[in-house]
Image (tube, rainbow, N blue to C red):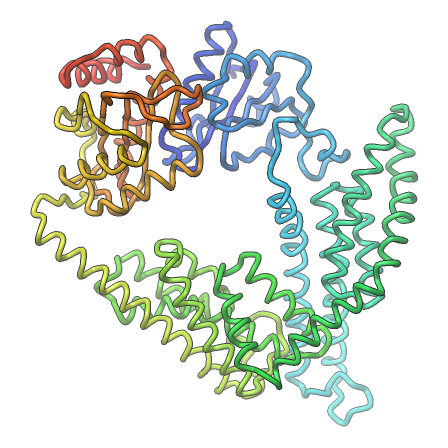
Length: 637
């Protein structure tokens, strides 16, 4: 087995150009130093040149140059440099030099014995609010399975009678008593688990321990899930603070720190603080719950509108989870009305997509129809996320339609006074739902309305596309199996010299015009928006006056490279702050042109080599530019 001194992983959000340019830059910088390196790429076609565990174990250091997840936890225990993909391109020699030094801290993935947050590389600087969101979602994701399992157990116990778990009732059933008792214990763990795993995300194992304690204080003192959130962050940051304060102690005392100093001081500081915060937190939690629950009788329409909009807004995201967690908290207090509306609002979106493909069958693709039909099953079991692929394609249109459908379902649920004692399960829990037929009617009506709106919009879009095809006979339809040819990507008619543009925006407009005029794309506005969206993720302005805007869209029919040499340089926010004089725009069909992606990645790699850039800048004619690319791509290793 060959071993490497340095290993690396590169990746950008679209995985078309930057990924492979960073790979080439790192490989070139390593070769210049006589160092062995292997670079794993996370591109459009998936992971290539994948690192094995043996290669990871044998490497001296790891360089991550990525703007996406590259499974960093694999490198736990190794020296890791973590930077953006742009820096991987621009600063490759410096990164190689740094990887060989002894100044890089060792990275510890979550679950290590130490509090890795205190030892992370200075390169890692995610935004504060993003980190807060990650910590919160870690708590919620660990809490939900326990809540669902416990809630379903309690719900099943009601099948024997509403009072079947009460020994004093005539309906008493011993088995139902066990089910409700076990489920109740699970539900009571909701707040401690939420708190513990928020703290664990911040301070790893020491935070987990103290988080359970602050969570139990929150539960005992009636502060609810809001108290659990506060307790989790309190415990996590207290433990990080203690880690910082005690880091000067001799290494021989590490065992004493982990089993005595950390837990004892953590319990005292975080536990006492949480206890003092419990009274105001209890007041806030009770007031919020009473406020929301009060709408059930006073204004069920407004409550349904709020709950429906929240549940369909991001379908499984933080806004959806806020409504769901509130519902589970009220459920644990014996309020089964609120959760009924939340469940209805969560079930409606996937069902709506199923009705949409039924109503507008011809306007959707075969894959979309299959996904819509599957969503009938997913929606029926309370899995909202099945609607996300439909919403992602037209978020500004589809999400409002789904919010309308969810709001209708929730409003009718509250007006019908439906009660759902289970936090999950969808139509599976119908036997224990009060007014089950009215509940199903409310959900179906909301789903059908949203589905009809989606179908209407999809039919309109399909009709517009059909009219465009009739008006523009040179529109090209993507073929499923197109032969991979270098001349298909680098075409003389797509090379332009002495182009007059005064800004990046004007350049995008001209590129989109060329794409539509040449039959490469069907929608100019979509192409411009695609370039702009990619630019927001990170600049495509490289060094030495070159920019490589690229986009992947359903509106693009054929893969191609449009080359424009500009008469005057334009501002592009480039890596070296230079003006851009040469634009290489890559057009990629959505989910297609897999063979051509390999050619485009090879073209991207060439742009790292200064000798090639100089030749390209000196080329005067279209033929010279075309020939230079073809020779270099065919000869490039």
